Image (cartoon, rainbow, N blue to C red; front, side, top):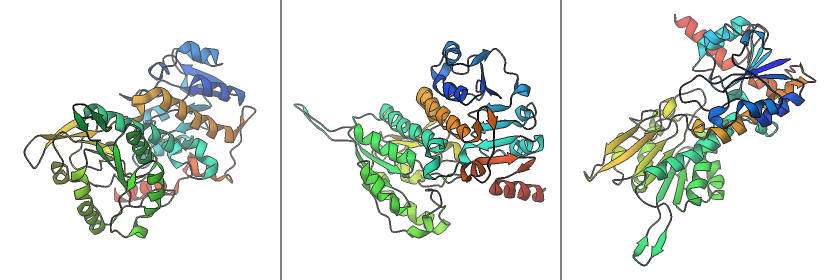
Length: 386
């Protein structure tokens, strides 16, 4: 069975879907692995390192001949048109935002696995790419904040006087938020956090943060799979009102709130940002899906004038956060891919057991149809609206 990994073509994407380490695992599964030359360069892996691990490196990948294709970024309809019917693809697919590609995959008869759909159960933790990449993004968000913040993060007591620690507020206590809390704490900041899921309070405290409790309907915000549910307009407005003094008191604000398949919830208005102190920094990790902060632009820094008129707050729209740390992000991602493949491949042959909740849950398309019910509903709704 021939598996292929190409160099990612999306601008700014530096990750790769396989590493020399994961290639060794794939070869042990009985796969014949082919890597496009240069696929791992930006992640710190040379062609020679892939060859040494047992892969064949080629100047141009013959997609039509592959039985399996692993990728990082979602595929395009044009690329799918070159995939062999009956072949398997595995990677991030963003099904809610890439309906034309999903349609193309189904029509082409491709069996596509979307890593976003891997069930959040204990047995599937080693295959959870959303969590592994969120961990990288959460760490990176603090580093980006620290490079822009004009003060120290830790407390310093010097002969010239005492420098107080930075006050960091993290909104959203999923994997990215918890990693941001832990990283900011390790840098010496005073960290507080809020999440609409009260069950996350103990996790925040375990990372060294102080949990901020707001007077909201907790049960209304509990979603499935560890995610939050989108709040109604009235509750969302109330949440912003209650967060306003906490935002104003922080030196660094990091927002990480996301709802699968939906635009990011608006947590912070421009007016709230303007109420912060001059020199403060806001990092929005959800910028690519609409942003948690009003006015954020993915991939850009925006200066927001303070209400006091004494300076600006820097609003950072994070883009390709995990890709910015391509070596470790690729190491984790490639392992997620290999572990999922290990569930379905034995001695080089594929055996798809759709009674297995991980395989069934992660499968986006198979045998000419869309298996993921929410995506199929979205496609039908779009078709009905035409």
